[in-house]
Image (cartoon, rainbow, N blue to C red; front, side):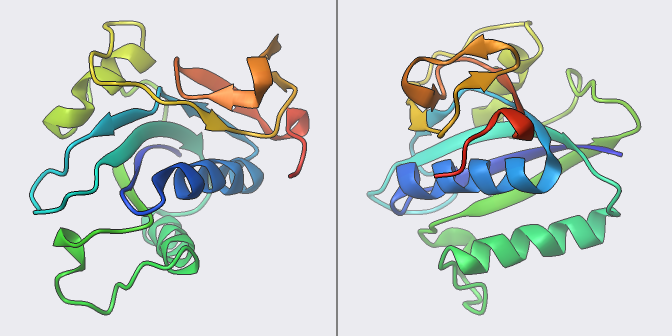
Length: 167
């Protein structure tokens, strides 16, 4: 099963999103990652901007087990899910499953408005106008091409674990 997922963070977001991408790559082996954008908080009051991105991964896990894995990652990064208001509070990491499919084409999937341009760009059907940011990912090669200084975030990229170098 293929999953379209989102990552968001507004507490030390460069650190948490970069680490999460590396952890997800280690878990799945391959990821298709969108650009990484900086956005204002949606549905909450905060002075901390978010970093957001999308990824597509294939997993044999059923959706509830995959979500449990993502929750465990969030907790390891310091998110307090015991707070009844955690959905509207600042967070170090938030990973959501947005859609699932037998194939990896999510170009027609419905996502929150602030993610629309990321989804369109991921499938070559548009461009992103929000500010893009780079994140370090300790790699030499990604999908057969060299990424300057091991940075991701400025354009969609396919990542493969056997090309990654651990930090």
